[in-house]
Image (cartoon, rainbow, N blue to C red):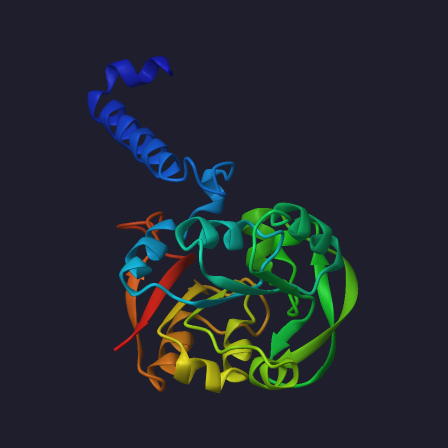
Amino acid sequence: MRLELFYNPALLIERLAIEIQRRRRLNKLRGTVAFSLKLGHIDSLEFLEIIKTDYPKIIYDIGANIGTWTLLAKANFPQVTVHAFEPLIIHHDKFEQTLQNVPNVYLHKVALGSSYGSVNMQVTSFSDASSVLEIAEATKDCFGITTEREEKVNIFPLDAYILEYNLPLPDLIKLDIQGYELEALRGAINCLINAKYIICEVSFIEFYKGQALFHEIVEFLHQYNFYLYALAINTPIGRKLSQTDVLFSKN
């Protein structure tokens, strides 16, 4: 413990409260398939707890990365079926390793947008930040992330992909696709009509060139009777917002 905390009781109490909260959150995952997840992987934990009173049958994990969010969802809803969407090759093997002993999880190795085709994904120095869109200056300045290469991937509108592969419609949709969330939603109108909840990463400043910001996501989802329900537990209070996760619920 840092010496300065002993001379600042208020700061000490604040730090202790934060540590207690961290441990409490991680302890909730004991005895589940997600017990090994770190704090950075459980930002949606409280959202999933809210939804537990309306247990979903089908979840779509859009921007599944290496499967940590899917694992968290299965910890909260063991009986749920998850269809995960992740286009980057470097994430596929790790996803399959993460979920190898977890039933009813299906990985779809495509990107989602508002139209058919192929796109060059911008693969970044921190692969989690890779996107269909080019990174903006804020990403470089705030996180020191740069683009390293491009990877050509297939892209589909979600509604069309569902029809082609005969997938069930989702009750819950999670999106974390680095600024491309609105384009994916535009291709998922039938999903929005069916779904009850959406968990979405939103930005208040431009981290990717041409990305939709928070107010644009809110305005679009309002057309389909979705309203902001909750902010992630780690959302800053009393400070400028740049990015957070939000839960939308159908009114």
